Length: 291
Image 1 (cartoon, helix red, strand yellow):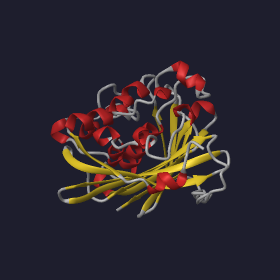
Image 2 (image 1 turned 90 degrees about the vertical axis):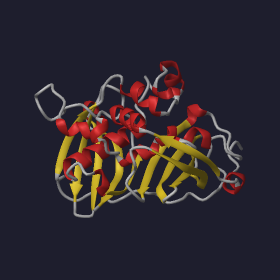
Image 3 (image 1 turned 60 degrees about the vertical axis):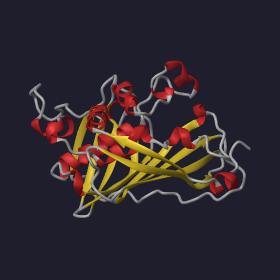
Image 4 (image 1 turned 180 degrees about the horizontal axis):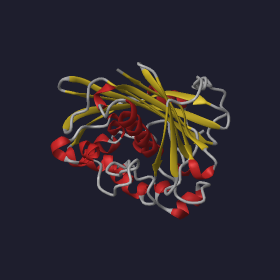
């Protein structure tokens, strides 16, 4: 079996230094669509977008944590940990959760420690939970959990793990916004460090079972968090405490995301769909906890 659960869970964590600067933050923000003006007729840049793109006003959207230091020690490197040997074409990002311990600085150096926190047997697939904990000289900064589906690697009789499904939000959403995904969005986003050819190479995408390259799930993840912050949190990124989602479907570059939000004082529930494909689900079980 290519996945040896006992060996993978017992493996020593991998630690390494990561660093980032304002250019990395700006590139990430551009990769998730910052600088666009989706809600106004004017072609001019919305002045509010400058907090994502202009170094003198820059703040950091918490989802930048998924790519800071090029995402090291990251999903791809995690798939080479002891006990894990899988075909990248069978790998899908199933979900992502982020806990923010302090607001992310515009530039910094930190230590990222990655390990396999859990492995679940879903029968037709294995699910790897890859945990990355990041600290700097002042203490913990953030914790990332990536849930990775490896198709065809289940069935060894292991723990199925939690379902992770939430009850749908009640009633009509408080806000609904749409965000256009540029045709070249995946090519721009991958410059932040996710080099999986699934998002750029048409031939690789076909081998993986897709008609053409798909958008990174974490790009949709970032677009969605930005929409919540800008629409319901007054543009204040420091209000975000945690953010989790399940990737329920793919997005193709050039499509439009419909983002539905159910808002309370402590959290915002979100559902995201692809407009052009009859509102096909994209993100589900999505919760942004905030102050």
